[in-house]
Length: 426
Image 1 (cartoon, rainbow, N blue to C red):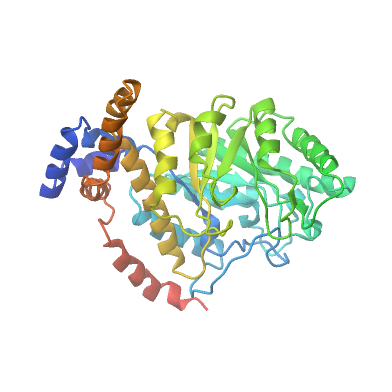
Image 2: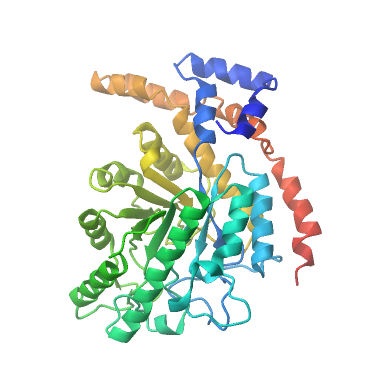
């Protein structure tokens, strides 16, 4: 339990929480213990929701690599300081202590153009200092999109050796940035590699690009760096790579297992009817740790704001009840420019926390006991009963203990911030 939680839990609890606690106690669940565990689960909040994946580089073309943002809600962040201020506002409304996930394109390069094969930790010094002041961890991502050398849809798997060399150097430097972040903050930075390489139409050669991608990655990862964890992220398809993505699920699963890297499972990167919850207990047999990018695809990888739906509940449950929290890094990955961007962070992060809380409030041993006894009737009855228990009152108590707004009370703070800050941005 963190200090903020301890101070808050000393105050009298509400009547609704007392009633809820009694209800959960009847099925063998200690709600206070669940709240203590929830307070210790950090979520890596993605910076790119705050500015529509634009970043702060000089002279970079518009979004590419299959990324598109819809909407033009007023008030998006235009500078690093504005983005940090918006994140600070969001964290005031989100209970617990968390992390921030940065892309390489969000460095502070000044007026001079710094190409991606030349980035250094010093370009992220202000982010590191800010994270230290805010008691936040940092995670990192190379940016293999929205660049002239990625315009034809290929980077690390490019047929040109010189282009591959450029992106290999970018990957190496990003790992060095991640290492510097992790060492400075005392908490390891996950540096996640997502590469959008692929063909719009059916290729004649599926093998050679994958050979080049594996070779490039091996070159990037050849040096061990303290403070840094490497992750690789597959994808089913992208805009402009509908028929073939070099870094498929099978490719990166094999790569992560053979090289003992973290595998990133993004909930929007698979078939629309395919959930990632069932994959978690399978892949963790063979890799040391897992990275989750929690998103919400609607018909395709559309990166909608995360909501408390069945898929999210299933993902959270698999991580919690199987004891995978220490081996799983949980982050968000979506961007919606059609609504208030600060609210989008708050809604998605709180939804993920509520899903984790639902898992922590589950009487897992009772369910497993019924299953082992082949008493599937009791298992189903208890699973259904859980849906009607007053988890909302437990969530409100968590927010209260963490000095975060309960229920919908946070929306008034967002509206005030919008009027006082966001609306003044041109």
